[in-house]
Length: 202
Image (cartoon, rainbow, N blue to C red; front, top):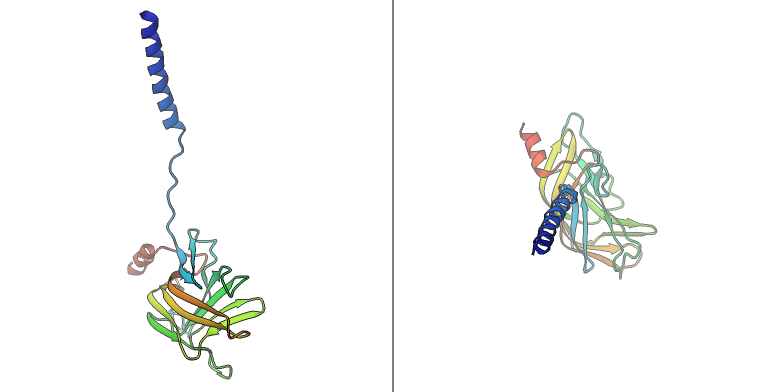
């Protein structure tokens, strides 16, 4: 009888030790980093999602800015967003849009007049080697800016977009954006919505 009791005791002790070891050795769950910049939506029927968790390494950014002398809010800024290969965009590309003036609200963007001397107009295009896509002259490309923060002279923008871009080289090729939401900020100084609001209200 004693050997049976001893065997049960050893078995129970081994279970306790195994549980203790597994608890000690299991890695702590990593803290989930906030999504800083993102682009989510449907491009030519294909769902696309880019999310940036690193404030210093992010393919979505505001890369060109211009100011009026003495102004703290940019007059114009250009956002760059990578687009993966989809139908009619076999090699992928990069979506650029410039918004002028910088503000919240709706932008309805038509193609720029090549003879226009002033650059202070909204524009949107996709560029890839040898191919350019631009807004349609009859149906505007719509960008809704829901939030615009400027912190330490750096703009941050959050909004939505929809519309169709047409190839300059082949009228039959289009890139259609549907139900897209995005957020972009200057790489090297990215903050979450909550952090930006806190800084601005200080």
